[in-house]
Length: 251
Length: 153
Image: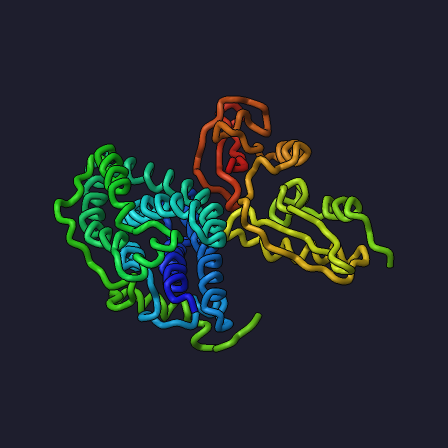
Protein backbone atom coordinates (compact mmCIF):
# COMPACT_ATOMS: atom_id res chain seq x y z
CA UNK A 1 0.00 0.00 0.00
CA UNK A 2 1.12 3.54 -0.78
CA UNK A 3 1.09 4.69 2.86
CA UNK A 4 2.29 8.22 2.22
CA UNK A 5 -0.39 8.93 -0.39
CA UNK A 6 -3.07 7.32 1.78
CA UNK A 7 -2.07 9.50 4.75
CA UNK A 8 -1.92 12.60 2.55
CA UNK A 9 -5.48 11.99 1.28
CA UNK A 10 -6.69 11.46 4.85
CA UNK A 11 -5.10 14.74 5.90
CA UNK A 12 -6.85 16.60 3.10
CA UNK A 13 -10.17 14.78 3.48
CA UNK A 14 -10.33 14.77 7.27
CA UNK A 15 -9.78 18.54 7.32
CA UNK A 16 -12.73 19.11 5.00
CA UNK A 17 -14.85 16.48 6.76
CA UNK A 18 -14.35 17.83 10.28
CA UNK A 19 -14.70 21.46 9.24
CA UNK A 20 -17.69 20.60 7.04
CA UNK A 21 -19.41 18.94 9.98
CA UNK A 22 -18.57 21.81 12.32
CA UNK A 23 -19.95 24.37 9.89
CA UNK A 24 -23.08 22.27 9.34
CA UNK A 25 -23.78 22.58 13.09
CA UNK A 26 -24.89 26.14 12.32
CA UNK A 27 -27.74 24.94 10.14
CA UNK A 28 -30.87 26.60 11.52
CA UNK A 29 -28.91 28.64 14.11
CA UNK A 30 -27.11 31.40 12.18
CA UNK A 31 -27.78 35.05 13.04
CA UNK A 32 -29.67 35.73 9.79
CA UNK A 33 -31.18 33.53 7.11
CA UNK A 34 -28.67 34.51 4.41
CA UNK A 35 -25.74 33.53 6.63
CA UNK A 36 -27.46 30.30 7.57
CA UNK A 37 -27.78 29.41 3.90
CA UNK A 38 -24.21 30.49 3.17
CA UNK A 39 -22.84 28.35 6.00
CA UNK A 40 -24.89 25.35 4.92
CA UNK A 41 -23.64 25.72 1.35
CA UNK A 42 -20.04 26.01 2.51
CA UNK A 43 -20.46 22.89 4.61
CA UNK A 44 -21.93 21.10 1.62
CA UNK A 45 -18.95 21.98 -0.59
CA UNK A 46 -16.56 20.77 2.12
CA UNK A 47 -18.41 17.48 2.54
CA UNK A 48 -18.42 17.05 -1.24
CA UNK A 49 -14.66 17.56 -1.34
CA UNK A 50 -14.37 15.03 1.49
CA UNK A 51 -16.05 12.44 -0.72
CA UNK A 52 -13.33 12.93 -3.33
CA UNK A 53 -10.39 12.87 -0.89
CA UNK A 54 -11.60 9.99 1.26
CA UNK A 55 -12.78 8.15 -1.86
CA UNK A 56 -9.25 8.39 -3.21
CA UNK A 57 -7.80 7.41 0.18
CA UNK A 58 -9.91 4.24 0.13
CA UNK A 59 -8.86 3.48 -3.44
CA UNK A 60 -5.18 3.94 -2.56
CA UNK A 61 -5.54 1.76 0.53
CA UNK A 62 -7.17 -0.99 -1.52
CA UNK A 63 -8.95 -2.69 1.36
CA UNK A 64 -12.46 -1.98 0.15
CA UNK A 65 -13.10 0.99 2.44
CA UNK A 66 -15.03 3.77 0.72
CA UNK A 67 -15.44 7.41 1.74
CA UNK A 68 -18.42 6.63 4.00
CA UNK A 69 -16.57 3.85 5.79
CA UNK A 70 -13.60 6.09 6.40
CA UNK A 71 -15.78 8.94 7.61
CA UNK A 72 -18.09 6.98 9.85
CA UNK A 73 -16.17 3.91 10.99
CA UNK A 74 -12.94 5.37 12.34
CA UNK A 75 -12.36 6.67 15.84
CA UNK A 76 -10.68 9.94 16.81
CA UNK A 77 -7.09 8.66 16.81
CA UNK A 78 -7.38 7.60 13.16
CA UNK A 79 -8.35 11.11 12.04
CA UNK A 80 -5.65 13.21 10.42
CA UNK A 81 -7.35 16.61 10.57
CA UNK A 82 -5.55 19.60 12.05
CA UNK A 83 -6.65 20.81 15.48
CA UNK A 84 -7.86 24.11 14.02
CA UNK A 85 -10.86 22.57 12.27
CA UNK A 86 -12.12 20.60 15.26
CA UNK A 87 -12.29 23.70 17.48
CA UNK A 88 -15.89 24.43 18.52
CA UNK A 89 -17.83 27.02 16.58
CA UNK A 90 -17.98 29.60 19.37
CA UNK A 91 -19.87 32.68 18.20
CA UNK A 92 -20.45 33.54 14.55
CA UNK A 93 -17.28 35.66 14.49
CA UNK A 94 -15.13 32.80 15.78
CA UNK A 95 -16.63 30.47 13.18
CA UNK A 96 -15.83 32.92 10.41
CA UNK A 97 -12.31 33.54 11.71
CA UNK A 98 -11.65 29.78 11.76
CA UNK A 99 -13.08 29.59 8.25
CA UNK A 100 -10.85 32.37 6.98
CA UNK A 101 -7.70 30.93 8.56
CA UNK A 102 -8.50 27.58 6.93
CA UNK A 103 -9.73 28.92 3.57
CA UNK A 104 -6.53 30.95 3.14
CA UNK A 105 -4.43 27.83 3.64
CA UNK A 106 -6.66 25.58 1.57
CA UNK A 107 -6.76 27.93 -1.40
CA UNK A 108 -2.95 28.16 -1.48
CA UNK A 109 -2.59 24.40 -1.10
CA UNK A 110 -5.13 23.57 -3.82
CA UNK A 111 -3.52 26.03 -6.22
CA UNK A 112 -0.28 24.11 -5.87
CA UNK A 113 -2.02 20.74 -6.10
CA UNK A 114 -3.29 21.70 -9.55
CA UNK A 115 0.28 20.86 -10.65
CA UNK A 116 0.38 17.57 -8.75
CA UNK A 117 2.22 14.64 -10.32
CA UNK A 118 -0.77 12.46 -9.39
CA UNK A 119 -3.61 13.00 -11.88
CA UNK A 120 -6.28 12.08 -9.33
CA UNK A 121 -5.00 14.63 -6.82
CA UNK A 122 -4.77 17.19 -9.61
CA UNK A 123 -8.38 16.58 -10.70
CA UNK A 124 -9.73 17.00 -7.16
CA UNK A 125 -7.72 20.20 -6.72
CA UNK A 126 -9.03 21.64 -10.00
CA UNK A 127 -12.57 20.99 -8.90
CA UNK A 128 -12.26 22.05 -5.26
CA UNK A 129 -10.20 25.19 -5.84
CA UNK A 130 -13.10 26.90 -7.61
CA UNK A 131 -15.33 26.35 -4.60
CA UNK A 132 -12.65 27.34 -2.13
CA UNK A 133 -11.92 30.60 -3.96
CA UNK A 134 -15.55 31.45 -3.35
CA UNK A 135 -15.35 30.47 0.33
CA UNK A 136 -12.27 32.61 0.76
CA UNK A 137 -13.98 35.64 -0.78
CA UNK A 138 -16.76 35.36 1.71
CA UNK A 139 -14.78 34.56 4.86
CA UNK A 140 -12.30 37.35 4.05
CA UNK A 141 -15.09 39.92 3.56
CA UNK A 142 -16.78 38.82 6.77
CA UNK A 143 -13.57 38.99 8.81
CA UNK A 144 -12.91 42.50 7.47
CA UNK A 145 -16.51 43.61 7.97
CA UNK A 146 -16.71 42.39 11.56
CA UNK A 147 -13.11 43.27 12.49
CA UNK A 148 -13.46 46.80 11.21
CA UNK A 149 -17.04 47.00 12.44
CA UNK A 150 -18.50 48.03 15.78
CA UNK A 151 -16.53 48.01 19.03
CA UNK A 152 -18.38 44.82 19.98
CA UNK A 153 -17.73 42.97 16.72
CA UNK A 154 -14.10 44.15 16.70
CA UNK A 155 -13.42 42.83 20.18
CA UNK A 156 -15.07 39.50 19.39
CA UNK A 157 -12.99 39.10 16.22
CA UNK A 158 -9.79 39.97 18.05
CA UNK A 159 -10.68 37.40 20.72
CA UNK A 160 -11.35 34.83 17.98
CA UNK A 161 -7.99 35.52 16.33
CA UNK A 162 -6.16 35.32 19.68
CA UNK A 163 -7.88 32.01 20.41
CA UNK A 164 -7.36 30.39 17.01
CA UNK A 165 -3.98 31.69 15.90
CA UNK A 166 -2.11 29.20 18.12
CA UNK A 167 -3.59 26.45 15.90
CA UNK A 168 -2.44 27.91 12.59
CA UNK A 169 1.15 26.66 12.69
CA UNK A 170 0.06 23.03 12.52
CA UNK A 171 -1.10 23.56 8.93
CA UNK A 172 2.58 23.95 8.00
CA UNK A 173 3.90 20.96 9.90
CA UNK A 174 6.51 18.69 8.35
CA UNK A 175 7.17 15.01 8.88
CA UNK A 176 8.39 12.06 6.80
CA UNK A 177 5.05 11.78 5.02
CA UNK A 178 5.20 15.42 3.90
CA UNK A 179 8.79 14.92 2.78
CA UNK A 180 7.95 11.84 0.71
CA UNK A 181 4.84 13.42 -0.84
CA UNK A 182 6.85 16.52 -1.79
CA UNK A 183 9.74 14.42 -3.12
CA UNK A 184 7.30 12.61 -5.43
CA UNK A 185 5.83 15.88 -6.67
CA UNK A 186 2.36 15.07 -5.34
CA UNK A 187 2.12 18.17 -3.12
CA UNK A 188 4.37 20.99 -1.95
CA UNK A 189 6.01 20.87 1.45
CA UNK A 190 3.45 22.53 3.72
CA UNK A 191 6.16 24.84 5.06
CA UNK A 192 6.64 26.25 1.54
CA UNK A 193 3.16 27.79 1.74
CA UNK A 194 3.86 29.72 4.92
CA UNK A 195 5.30 32.84 3.30
CA UNK A 196 2.33 33.39 1.00
CA UNK A 197 -0.05 32.53 3.83
CA UNK A 198 1.51 35.00 6.24
CA UNK A 199 1.39 37.75 3.61
CA UNK A 200 -2.29 37.11 2.90
CA UNK A 201 -3.23 36.97 6.58
CA UNK A 202 -1.24 40.12 7.34
CA UNK A 203 -3.03 42.05 4.58
CA UNK A 204 -6.49 41.01 5.63
CA UNK A 205 -5.92 41.48 9.35
CA UNK A 206 -4.58 44.97 8.70
CA UNK A 207 -7.72 45.74 6.71
CA UNK A 208 -9.80 44.26 9.50
CA UNK A 209 -7.90 46.38 12.09
CA UNK A 210 -6.99 43.20 13.97
CA UNK A 211 -3.64 42.38 15.54
CA UNK A 212 -1.98 39.04 14.81
CA UNK A 213 -0.44 37.57 17.99
CA UNK A 214 3.36 37.81 18.15
CA UNK A 215 4.00 34.22 19.11
CA UNK A 216 4.19 31.55 16.44
CA UNK A 217 3.95 28.80 19.03
CA UNK A 218 1.45 26.21 17.80
CA UNK A 219 -0.59 23.34 19.15
CA UNK A 220 0.09 20.11 17.24
CA UNK A 221 -1.09 16.52 17.25
CA UNK A 222 -4.07 16.54 14.86
CA UNK A 223 -2.55 15.90 11.46
CA UNK A 224 -0.57 12.92 12.75
CA UNK A 225 -3.38 11.76 15.02
CA UNK A 226 -1.20 11.62 18.13
CA UNK A 227 -3.05 14.19 20.23
CA UNK A 228 -6.44 15.36 19.06
CA UNK A 229 -8.23 17.73 21.40
CA UNK A 230 -11.18 16.42 23.40
CA UNK A 231 -13.49 18.27 20.99
CA UNK A 232 -13.03 15.79 18.14
CA UNK A 233 -14.31 12.81 20.14
CA UNK A 234 -17.44 14.67 21.17
CA UNK A 235 -18.02 15.76 17.59
CA UNK A 236 -17.65 12.20 16.30
CA UNK A 237 -20.14 10.76 18.78
CA UNK A 238 -22.71 13.00 17.16
CA UNK A 239 -21.51 12.72 13.56
CA UNK A 240 -21.13 8.93 13.70
CA UNK A 241 -24.06 8.21 15.97
CA UNK A 242 -26.19 6.42 13.40
CA UNK A 243 -23.39 4.27 12.04
CA UNK A 244 -22.29 3.36 15.58
CA UNK A 245 -25.80 2.52 16.74
CA UNK A 246 -26.77 0.64 13.56
CA UNK A 247 -23.62 -0.72 11.90
CA UNK A 248 -24.10 -1.39 8.18
CA UNK A 249 -27.45 0.42 8.15
CA UNK A 250 -28.74 1.12 4.63
CA UNK A 251 -31.54 3.30 3.41
CA UNK B 1 -33.76 -3.53 -30.16
CA UNK B 2 -31.49 -1.66 -32.52
CA UNK B 3 -28.97 0.65 -30.98
CA UNK B 4 -30.12 4.27 -30.88
CA UNK B 5 -27.81 6.75 -32.52
CA UNK B 6 -25.68 9.00 -30.34
CA UNK B 7 -27.70 12.00 -31.56
CA UNK B 8 -30.93 10.33 -30.48
CA UNK B 9 -29.51 9.72 -27.01
CA UNK B 10 -28.47 13.37 -26.71
CA UNK B 11 -32.00 14.37 -27.73
CA UNK B 12 -33.47 12.12 -25.03
CA UNK B 13 -31.15 13.55 -22.40
CA UNK B 14 -32.08 17.07 -23.51
CA UNK B 15 -35.59 16.22 -22.28
CA UNK B 16 -34.44 15.35 -18.74
CA UNK B 17 -34.98 18.34 -16.43
CA UNK B 18 -32.46 19.30 -13.78
CA UNK B 19 -34.06 18.17 -10.49
CA UNK B 20 -33.27 21.46 -8.69
CA UNK B 21 -33.93 23.84 -11.58
CA UNK B 22 -36.49 22.03 -13.75
CA UNK B 23 -36.64 24.93 -16.20
CA UNK B 24 -33.43 23.68 -17.81
CA UNK B 25 -32.32 20.23 -18.93
CA UNK B 26 -29.23 18.30 -17.94
CA UNK B 27 -27.84 18.96 -21.42
CA UNK B 28 -28.50 22.71 -21.07
CA UNK B 29 -26.62 22.63 -17.78
CA UNK B 30 -23.55 21.20 -19.53
CA UNK B 31 -23.02 18.34 -17.12
CA UNK B 32 -23.38 15.54 -19.69
CA UNK B 33 -19.84 15.36 -21.05
CA UNK B 34 -20.00 12.34 -23.34
CA UNK B 35 -22.31 9.66 -24.67
CA UNK B 36 -20.79 6.51 -26.22
CA UNK B 37 -21.80 2.99 -27.05
CA UNK B 38 -19.43 0.37 -25.70
CA UNK B 39 -20.78 -2.79 -27.32
CA UNK B 40 -24.36 -3.01 -26.13
CA UNK B 41 -23.70 -0.78 -23.09
CA UNK B 42 -24.47 2.90 -23.27
CA UNK B 43 -21.84 4.91 -21.39
CA UNK B 44 -22.84 8.38 -20.20
CA UNK B 45 -20.18 10.61 -18.66
CA UNK B 46 -21.49 13.10 -16.11
CA UNK B 47 -19.61 15.83 -14.27
CA UNK B 48 -20.88 17.31 -11.00
CA UNK B 49 -21.62 21.05 -10.79
CA UNK B 50 -20.43 21.42 -7.18
CA UNK B 51 -18.59 18.72 -5.20
CA UNK B 52 -21.35 18.46 -2.62
CA UNK B 53 -24.37 19.13 -4.80
CA UNK B 54 -27.06 16.93 -3.25
CA UNK B 55 -28.80 16.63 -6.62
CA UNK B 56 -25.94 14.54 -8.06
CA UNK B 57 -27.34 11.14 -7.11
CA UNK B 58 -30.83 12.15 -8.19
CA UNK B 59 -29.43 13.33 -11.53
CA UNK B 60 -27.86 9.91 -12.11
CA UNK B 61 -31.14 8.28 -11.23
CA UNK B 62 -33.06 10.51 -13.67
CA UNK B 63 -30.59 9.78 -16.49
CA UNK B 64 -30.91 6.09 -15.95
CA UNK B 65 -34.69 6.26 -15.80
CA UNK B 66 -34.94 8.28 -19.01
CA UNK B 67 -32.66 5.90 -20.89
CA UNK B 68 -34.56 2.84 -19.66
CA UNK B 69 -37.83 4.40 -20.78
CA UNK B 70 -36.31 4.59 -24.24
CA UNK B 71 -35.45 0.91 -24.09
CA UNK B 72 -31.76 1.04 -23.24
CA UNK B 73 -30.99 -1.93 -21.05
CA UNK B 74 -27.32 -1.66 -20.22
CA UNK B 75 -26.18 1.68 -18.90
CA UNK B 76 -22.84 2.71 -17.44
CA UNK B 77 -22.70 6.10 -15.74
CA UNK B 78 -19.22 7.51 -15.37
CA UNK B 79 -18.31 10.37 -13.07
CA UNK B 80 -15.69 12.74 -14.40
CA UNK B 81 -14.36 15.66 -12.33
CA UNK B 82 -11.61 16.89 -14.64
CA UNK B 83 -11.85 19.26 -16.40
CA UNK B 84 -14.10 20.77 -13.73
CA UNK B 85 -17.56 21.98 -14.66
CA UNK B 86 -17.80 25.61 -15.62
CA UNK B 87 -20.82 27.81 -16.25
CA UNK B 88 -19.30 28.40 -19.72
CA UNK B 89 -20.80 25.01 -20.53
CA UNK B 90 -24.36 26.26 -20.02
CA UNK B 91 -26.01 26.32 -23.41
CA UNK B 92 -27.33 29.57 -24.90
CA UNK B 93 -30.76 27.99 -24.78
CA UNK B 94 -30.20 27.15 -21.11
CA UNK B 95 -29.24 30.73 -20.30
CA UNK B 96 -32.40 32.04 -21.96
CA UNK B 97 -34.54 29.46 -20.14
CA UNK B 98 -33.00 30.42 -16.79
CA UNK B 99 -33.77 34.08 -17.34
CA UNK B 100 -37.35 33.33 -18.41
CA UNK B 101 -37.71 31.24 -15.23
CA UNK B 102 -36.58 34.20 -13.07
CA UNK B 103 -32.95 33.20 -12.49
CA UNK B 104 -30.33 35.64 -13.78
CA UNK B 105 -27.78 33.72 -15.92
CA UNK B 106 -24.07 33.78 -15.02
CA UNK B 107 -21.95 36.71 -16.18
CA UNK B 108 -18.15 36.87 -16.34
CA UNK B 109 -18.33 40.16 -14.40
CA UNK B 110 -19.37 38.12 -11.36
CA UNK B 111 -22.88 39.51 -10.97
CA UNK B 112 -26.10 39.72 -12.95
CA UNK B 113 -26.32 42.43 -15.62
CA UNK B 114 -30.03 42.95 -15.04
CA UNK B 115 -33.04 41.88 -13.02
CA UNK B 116 -34.68 38.79 -14.60
CA UNK B 117 -38.11 40.14 -13.58
CA UNK B 118 -38.19 43.77 -14.77
CA UNK B 119 -34.94 44.12 -16.67
CA UNK B 120 -33.75 46.90 -14.35
CA UNK B 121 -29.99 47.28 -13.99
CA UNK B 122 -30.06 48.69 -10.47
CA UNK B 123 -29.27 45.41 -8.68
CA UNK B 124 -27.41 44.54 -5.48
CA UNK B 125 -26.15 41.38 -3.84
CA UNK B 126 -27.90 40.08 -0.73
CA UNK B 127 -25.75 36.98 -0.20
CA UNK B 128 -23.01 35.10 -2.03
CA UNK B 129 -25.00 31.91 -1.54
CA UNK B 130 -28.56 30.99 -2.38
CA UNK B 131 -31.08 28.17 -2.34
CA UNK B 132 -28.72 25.74 -4.11
CA UNK B 133 -24.90 25.59 -4.29
CA UNK B 134 -24.96 27.03 -7.82
CA UNK B 135 -26.86 30.23 -7.00
CA UNK B 136 -26.47 33.51 -5.10
CA UNK B 137 -29.18 35.87 -3.83
CA UNK B 138 -29.59 39.30 -5.36
CA UNK B 139 -32.29 41.93 -5.34
CA UNK B 140 -33.51 44.52 -7.79
CA UNK B 141 -33.74 48.06 -6.47
CA UNK B 142 -36.07 49.08 -9.30
CA UNK B 143 -38.86 46.54 -8.87
CA UNK B 144 -37.76 45.63 -5.29
CA UNK B 145 -37.98 41.89 -6.03
CA UNK B 146 -35.31 39.47 -4.81
CA UNK B 147 -34.01 36.98 -7.35
CA UNK B 148 -31.57 34.11 -7.76
CA UNK B 149 -28.37 34.62 -9.71
CA UNK B 150 -26.62 31.62 -11.22
CA UNK B 151 -23.02 31.91 -9.96
CA UNK B 152 -20.31 32.16 -12.59
CA UNK B 153 -17.56 29.60 -12.01
